Length: 631
Image (cartoon, rainbow, N blue to C red; front, side, top):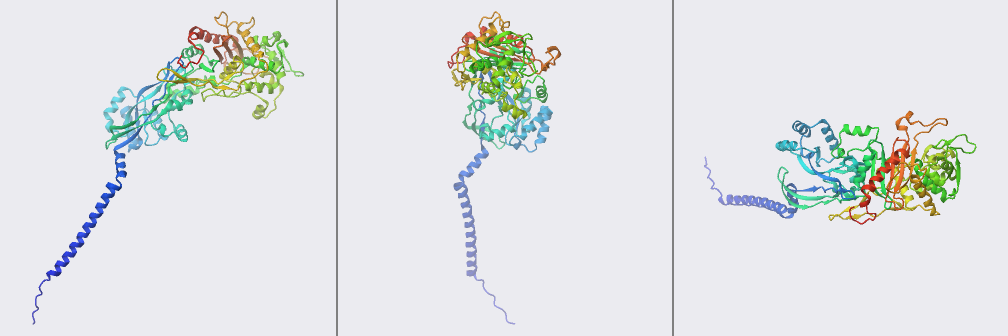
């Protein structure tokens, strides 16, 4: 057996193998280090700004700051709408894992009512999940203390302090000021459509009615922002930078609060409205609709019980009767029709009729009756206004025809919006042939024209329209848009006045006809047979006006009107329009009292109370010129 020789190890080969493996391993390590270094370079150099932004996004937040809403003053600088601090319990749905469980715990802790939970659920539908939604507003000190002690249990829930609108004079100015309330889904949609979503990022309320809504763009202001540093729990550690919001502008109204309160007191317990304006400018000195309601109920969310009470009230307090109430103007428009008759030469100052208390059309059996059964005897245009002779105006309407009447009264502003700075306005109705055809698909009959002559039939007007039309008479054709807003308040107390708004003048062929009509209105108050002479007996100023009694249903040919036998809602409306002083008018007053009866006995005395208060308490301090200072 041959013995094999043992082979000696090849150390050179092993060394080479080790070297190769070491080189490969080193290359792998170097490659991995290169990848790491490359990634570090990308992260630290190339993507530095991106990751810094992300880091800051977790550490630094931009929080919108709601602007303070502008304040509202009366013409004397009295604050009518202010901002008061309130605390509210707010929830950010996005920051809560189990919203239902959180609400259940909060209900136990804060004794939340079912109505509060329902309102929260309703508002939640119209909000983005990252925006806070109020669960309870107007927290008291006990509520704040109780929640603060347990706040650590409720991430995404916090107590926020903010300014809230408050109306110190309650229902006195509701239909002028309106109110603000929580932004709902419809409001949010309009904000988005207007491209104002960013400007309302931190705003909870928006103007809903009145001046608050009409001048929302002025009162709201511009949103601000602050950069804040937060911890891992989202709590603010410190503020880094602030871009302050621009507060809304403070505005001044033409309204005189003293006069407004006097008007409210005069109408207490009655349904109706009083409008008081400055005929030289169109400025609304007072405008009250009775009954009214407290706008503060709506600011933080009105309860269902309170809202249903207002909504279902037969007195309709939610309606602004001054701008939305549509009433037959009755005899208050007789001066206007007299002017049309004179200007078209349909009548002259010498033209008379013999009023027997009855008017008939040729070959027609129907009889239109005067308010005085036995008539007024011989009547010309001046006396027809003074004694409010219906028969004279039946005859005048017949001679004019509906086309001339409708055209002229449209020029006075009837059947159209006045342009007052409120969205809550009706246009009334000035009947015409075209209107009746479109409304009833019927022709216009001559019998339809006769009652139009005394402001009845299809003719309806708002009290603001009536007031504007009387101002047109006073100004001999010059027409002004009724203005509630007077101007902007500056920090030094001066007012930047809004320019007066004018409309196309009402033109007549003979300027002397203005005097005929206005002098006849003077006789209504001061003449021996004037229908308002008793109401204005022994006053310390000279005024003029026109009474009206609006009939709300037709009376049969052989029947007579007996108020005691008629349902209250069908009784006549009492109306009056007037102005004073006669030579240089400072105010014009329009009164409408629903279902009160005759205008001479019920509306004229109310107008006198308003004028008495004005001349006893305000006229001495009332500067006719628009000086630019709060007066």
